[in-house]
Length: 86
Image 1 (cartoon, rainbow, N blue to C red):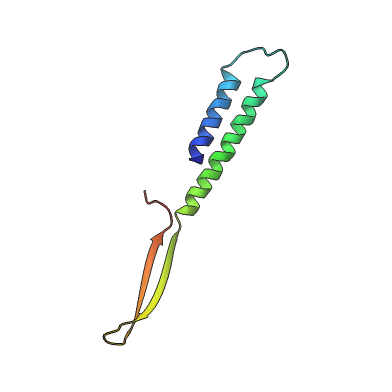
Image 2: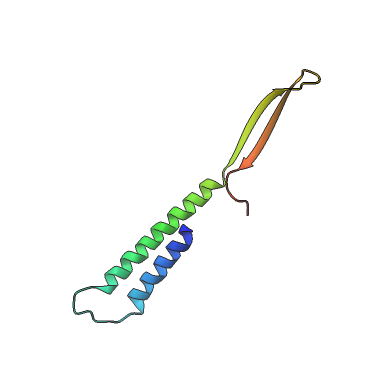
């Protein structure tokens, strides 16, 4: 979600900077707003990438239980990924 939002902000900012030529009479500078949106889009995109890579870390848990039939101890290692697997 945040990766797509970053791309959308960047594209809207680029459109304001490079494609829109409207004279607002000095009230609003569309070039500055476009550059701000482009910068915010890059920041949001990078934060989304960092969070995506953090979610894909693997977690290994180890549990030890006693087998009720024989009384022997059984150790079970389970490896899970926190995020969606692509």
